[in-house]
Length: 120
Image (tube, rainbow, N blue to C red):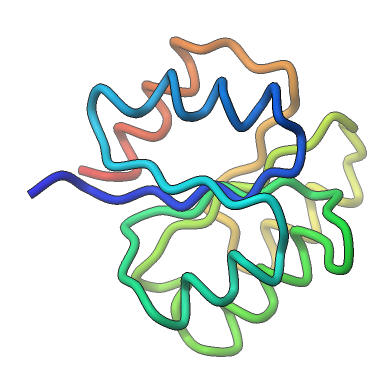
């Protein structure tokens, strides 16, 4: 059975990029809001979450807090993606249990390799 990745991303270009990059190897579910992402996490099993940091209604860090408070970061790696390379935000994400912090635009091969390592 294919590993499942939940992508929480509101930018249509990055939604398509994630789908294209990962769908040959994994089952990829893309949602465009934090609320939809939390709903999916409440009802379905995923092996990895990739969340944008700047989402309408809730940030990627808030999603990470919710996943962390439910005790799920131990079993589901969360990768935070952002177009800003703010060291404080990266530090916050790691402290909250993020498995990684990726700055957009990212190198596709590097992202594939990173995700592959997390899903082994």
